[in-house]
Length: 140
Figure 1 (cartoon, rainbow, N blue to C red):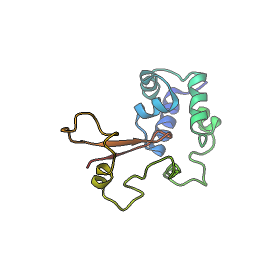
Figure 2: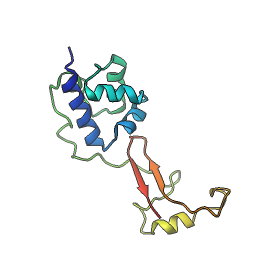
Figure 3: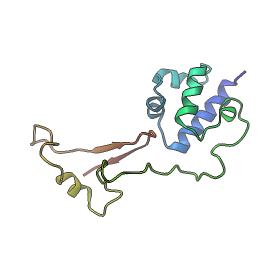
Figure 4: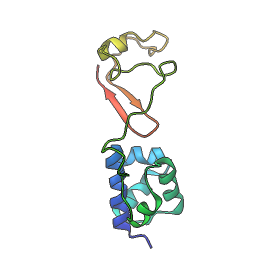
């Protein structure tokens, strides 16, 4: 039987490793946010569906470690922070992290077709979401 408190601490370790909030984690595994909250608080035990979605979405997480705490996470060959997703310059525009241009120049270089209809509104923030649940927030 799975110990709810220990399971919750392993989920928290996964969140910390990937730099995810509970909300981003729930989006990544396509699970209800309240269910994640109840599991993290120890109120509910995880369902098989929940466990399988975690293992499928995060292949570094070993099933036996997640359920029983046996083994290690992250695997010893991985670093403390996950690597950034690979980018394809043909399909993904460059971001401020991969270019030397300031964010304001990248924002200004966008075509007017990409801009909102109300051009008098200034851009407050740009958020880039990655498939692994991470994101970067830029303020011009």
